[in-house]
Amino acid sequence: MLVITRKAGEQICLGDDVTITVMEISGSTVRIGIEAPAEVPIYRHEIWDAVKEENRAAARTNIKDLPSAKAPPRS
Image 1: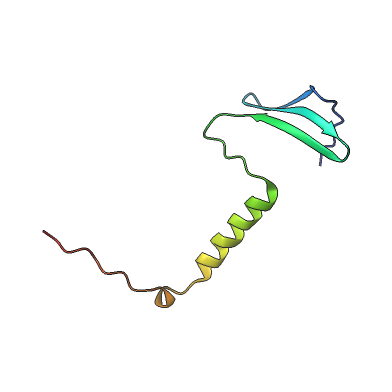
Image 2: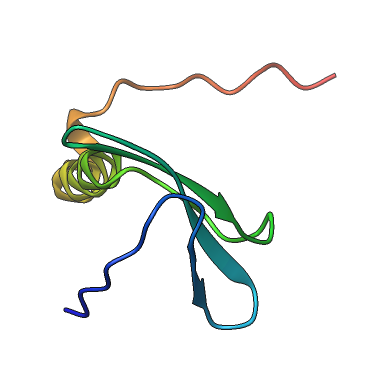
């Protein structure tokens, strides 16, 4: 892990397309701003962990345990 010290208003660049700016530091809380292309997903770590666990649970589900879906009538 790279550890970098930054002050409010200072930035970190990740490649050519992502810039992280320290917006504010208050006590033990740091507010950051992230500039990135729209196609780059940005998640808080705890949300990303929850999404990955939900995907793992879905992958473990047996298709026989899913409710049966009826196809809409054809016209």
